[in-house]
Image (tube, rainbow, N blue to C red; front, top):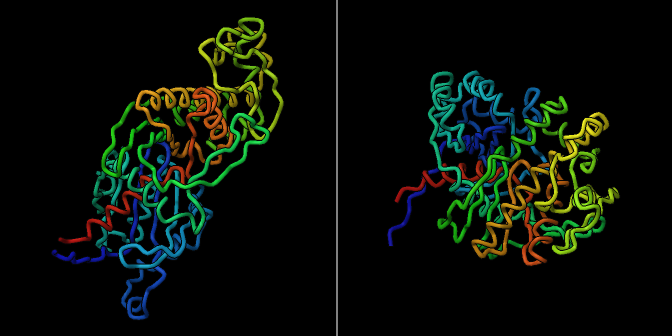
Length: 390
């Protein structure tokens, strides 16, 4: 048996996922640097490490998600912390300029990147910062990154969770669980758009379908309808709105329940832990935004109602498609990931409710703490894998 000769890649170690709305960046900070290494380390490498690890915000829009940091990981023979950073894709040129200003190209490191932006911005990296990108398949990176992060746990705690009693939204409880035996799983990646994968093993998967109606649709329409400017602002509005003022429900059409198919007509908008009972999974007899055909209704709604209705519409559509895919593929484990779910308790609980409701308890929605960062982690793993020589 021939042993591998492992040649560690040059620091710094990055993985990038350049999406349509957000750039996700993971950075491995070595904590086992010897005195000799520190003495030999060039100043701009120290500068990059200090800049990334001593700040939690970069400019007006860059954020380090400190609560997601993975501590004391051993990667490629080195021990350190893994940091998770995000910024809007529209700020990419400022990021590239920063790389140029810090003379990043002199470090002779490889930048591994995935997502559509790895192609879109490839020439900008080359011309602005003299940097070459190693472009990677985004679905491979997504799956490999997810499996890796789940395997190392979340600083001793499970990465995966679900909601106990999803139909009882007042008492629905976030509950940790194990993904130790993950296959087969239906992986629903909700970013700007949505991709749905049937995953049978680490390297055996297929893209079942997708939809363009995802996080980008929610944010774009919220900006148009409410004047908000950020995802956080849109979600804050949605948390204070009532979608029943915008959507037509079964009772608005039938005057009550549609008993033949057990569709409840009630729209009791009792506030609870982030979900209204009238936001149960929608049937084809209900009309998202149906009340907006009435001028009287349009004049009476708030921006918060519109944001809430948009969030519920997008989420229910994703849940419906995911459920049909799970049935067709005969897969009972459905895992939802992606940055659309970040700080978005309304959607996670609604997806959990939808899977449970329409499958009569046969399908359980699972979620992961690091939501939208798995593609970037997968890109980092490829950087470390590329250093192994047979």
